[in-house]
Image (tube, rainbow, N blue to C red; front, side, top):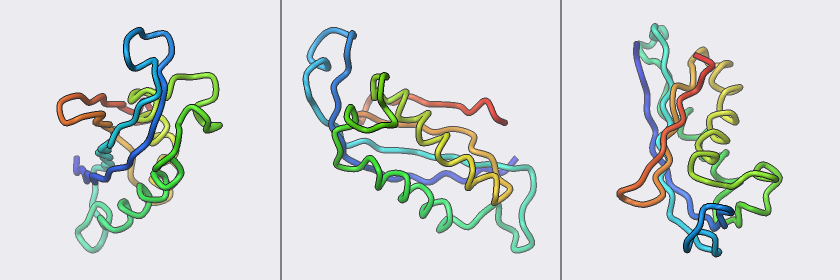
Length: 125
């Protein structure tokens, strides 16, 4: 299995309901996202996929949430915009592009700080 991982960051604010503590107040993060796609075979150029392609996909997805108040976005209506839900959102948004390129989204890791991260592992593999 070959994997390609791209790392990008974005900034956003959110409120996390029903968890107690300071996170129930409006606050923000400089999030870091690690996106991993994979497949068993390489293309004719000897690549799984060009890094530039995956960077472009991730940049387009992050553009929709960068410098936003996540609670107000339709994608997070009725759910906490937690790091867990952000990771799932990114994974699901990425799946159609990945499928067209014959790769699979394996996992998305979202770092809320330098020492706290969550990983969403797609069940579509």
